[in-house]
Image 1 (tube, rainbow, N blue to C red):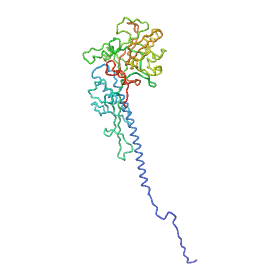
Image 2: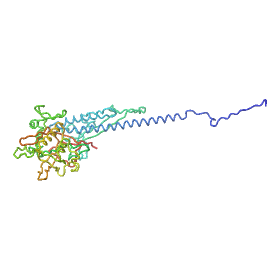
Image 3: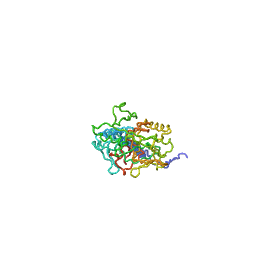
Image 4: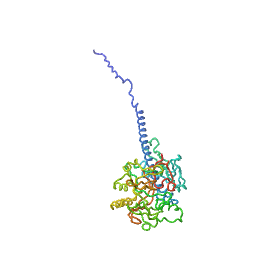
Length: 451
């Protein structure tokens, strides 16, 4: 119809009655992202610090154990004054070396040497006795002359105060770009040795040869008379040089130097001459110093190859199956073992093989454990000889040879030494001063961390 008016009404879609809101959730999203990043930063840097703490503990453990092991030093056996002072300095350097070789946070751990022996220093030497319940006791510098000094505490620090903190990767925006890490460990040289036990693949570095012992140091053929007694007057400058000090062990070259040929004088470590007679030898009319003073130990071996293996490598678990898997001194510090008083003289090849194997050990310059005995029960008919082992010493074999004077015998020359071995079994409750020394065993020890 002409003139009609048409009205068009357009209705807005549902939900569009109000203006659209833009960016309402953006601030919350940004806050959540910030919190998440902060948590990630804390987790990463926390893991970094935790890793650094583990590395620090491992480093100070290694440093303290190495320093404690260094306290076993051959020179202490010479009984000369001021020797412990020098040993402490070597042990201090050993701690620094091992700490640097075990980095923390990809950097070598540097220890302050602390020569003033400040109780809170990085390296502190002292005393530890598991029986007194006192714990580690720092030593004063004047105490370094004491042969009983046996422990070292190492504290590693990477802190802002030291100027060597651990860098933090993601926490800088929180104003914390560096973290502090510190750890400590104390190790000691346990000399309360009562025996030995093989560990997994590690054999006992023990020689199947026992040496004559006389704690009173009166028998001229004994270990004590030849190696300990000459050191009793070593502190006196006027005391004569031991006549049986003819060799000096070179630790770097790992070989012996002859006095008068390679070096001008000895090291005041008197040597022992050990003699094991050949079978059938007559030795009734000889000087006391030349008497037989060594015998073979037959430790669960029947064949000759087994004995040669023990000479070369030591005593393994298979050798101790009949002895409960260990060599432990029993009641009264006495351990009966089967022995052989003489070296079989026939066939001659047997003597040569033992002789050659002993000289191979001597050429390696390695310290070995030697059982000592006071008496034996001779063999009777079909019963073997029984050797009463009463203790253990340590020595390096200088050499072996067969001699005919004053009677046919296998001759060994030994220089006392100090050594540590993880195969040692210790028991402080059985402690006793041996050989007149202040230490339970002045030759052998086991390095332990103090809990």
